[in-house]
Image (cartoon, rainbow, N blue to C red; front, side, top):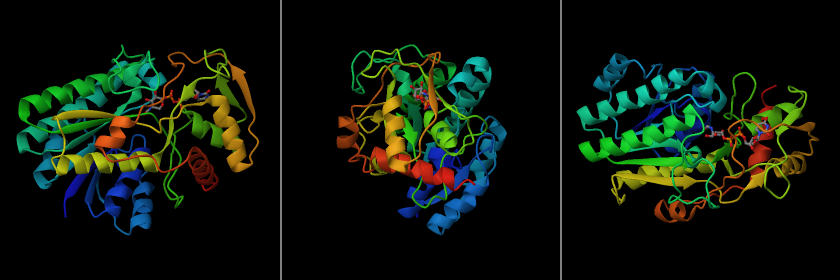
Length: 336
Ligand code: WQD
């Protein structure tokens, strides 16, 4: 049985990926510092799969702790989610973001280099494209100057991985996520934003649940059909399965270069107002919202061209937007 290390494995996308890894027979070990996740997720994962992943509470910024971990573990691949990910926060505390997101990555790659560990999957983001000139966004779209230190850590992270693979013969894939939403059908794992949600869907579900008074729609003067910004909202389980496909590609040595990257989205864009309408329809919950000013740093429109990912990863989305929104609402109701 191959062992896969999942860093940030108690987080939103990480936990859903651990479930999919266990479902197909991988042995999983999780490293998480619990800075943006909850230890209860570990039990909830094992309630779904019947298997409890090994767990180590380690801050990957601590090089010595990282070295100690790898002294005791042989892993056949690493899926690296652990990172700070709040765009607005990164503007206020850029050094925290560079120290954590870049420092942690470097420590992991140093261990891979020194211990000849191969097969690295990196959690990247469509943020690297900024406002793309052409839509849908293909992998050929130019990387634009980052709109935030968070986005910059993803761009720099990809460059560090590319150089490391070239110099040390490692193999890696970066998955450039669009907007992950929803929750596992079991309703045992889902998105657990700490404090006031930054992202749209948890804010929508908390408003519907009466936790938040009213949703603010950040701008309706964008150059889009209804004036609100467009994104590509992908069910988190579909996104988790893309990680399995990417890992299998590396384990089976089917990769064509030692550093590859793929856009992971549904291929369909939805505006904020369309999401509100779809949520109300899918859940029969009326949503209280108002239009306010744009949010600094937001792009007008971003949705994926998934042709390459579909072909090379032999992967495609299976869940609909309605299923994703329904699962997000079921998860929110389960939080009571
Ligand atoms: C989506 C749309 C907002 C909240 C960011 C990161 C990306 C990834 C996902 C980490 C936008 C609008 C939002 C609200 C709103 N992060 N909105 N009211 O900004 O597309 O992507 O989060 O992995 O890397 O860039 O996602 O959910 O914040 O916003 O109107 O209360 O919803 O303006 O148009 P975003 P989001």
